[in-house]
Amino acid sequence: MCSKCASRDWSLDRSLLEWLAELVGIRIGLSVTEVELGHIVREAMLEFPISDYKQVNEVFGRSALERLGLRGAIAASQGVIPRVSERVGDGELVARAVAFMMERVVRPGVVSKECAIPGAGSDLVGQFRATRYLPAVHIPQLEYGIPDVGARECVAEALRLHGRDFADAVAAVVDEMQFRAARSPIVLGLRRNWDDILDLSELFSSESVMASYGRFFDQRFVNYLAANYEAIGSIHWRKFEGLVAEYFHRAGFQVEIGPGRNDNGVDIRVWDESLTADVSPPTLLIQCKRVRREIDKVVVKALAADVAWEGAQQGLLVATAEWSPGAREVVRSRSYQVTEVNRVALQMWLEEMRVAGSGMWYPA
Image 1 (cartoon, one colour):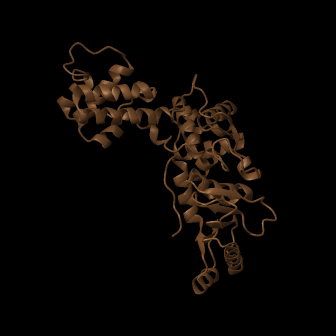
Image 2 (image 1 turned 120 degrees about the vertical axis):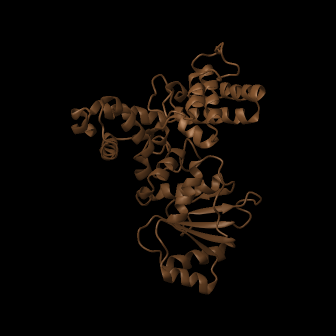
Image 3 (image 1 turned 60 degrees about the horizontal axis):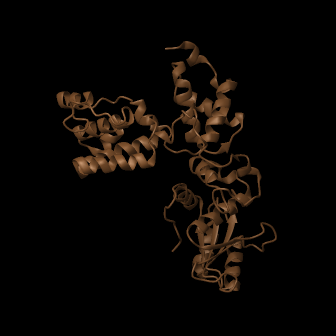
């Protein structure tokens, strides 16, 4: 064990912080201050003690990626073989599938002469047959990924040569390869995943509701908040409105976001895609409250009045705080068409938005 590594305060290492900033820019598309990166490094030092210089980039790089929104960066440090084994279950099938991909990634176009079938004569397959044990070893070449076209060709070849079960095992290997390649702290020569770099501080300071990756709220901010949900109450109030508008925009609704000020209590109007905006009454009127105190009944009654006035089907009060008992009681007793969307529901929204193509939660 390297005593200097264990005792060193890596959060003060300028070259490490500069490298982390570059890594985050490439992988996540965010610009982050050295202060924030230093905080992440200090947390990582407590959770993952450094015993060797070789661990520095791996540990701190993955910790920064995970903390800033690239989910799975830490889990991706696990080797391909154990994860594929969990998914496939059949040890020999896993060994053959891994060997099959090794022959195509490490030695493209070369198949061992002793192989009756791809991978059958490899050391990995032979070891499993002799010991019934798959070693949990890292195979670096399987963690660099493979072009999508090549991946599809490999799976198709496996299916053609050896049937569905083998092809499914190969597909699992490819999937785990791609998962790790997208989360690797090794980015030498890699192009940026994003067309621009977004300053993380804008999430907390900017009123803009325009986005490069999204209509009202950028996907990179979605990823960050999904990983750091405790920050939801600190983002700029206008960004909070943008987040809510983005959620319904992605769900296929027509969305009109208000000016932000002097909006008479209605922040967002939403129409079903089958309706004509500005002609039909809104499907939803939405008021956004990025607050810490309970939402009282006065706020709820005001939104209910707006719903009735505009002929909307329903009102949503989206807040980072809970409703007061009095607010819930007035909605129940007067049958107001107003629904609560609280911190728990907001977190569900972010999880859904984090993964492209997912569904949405919509109040009944």
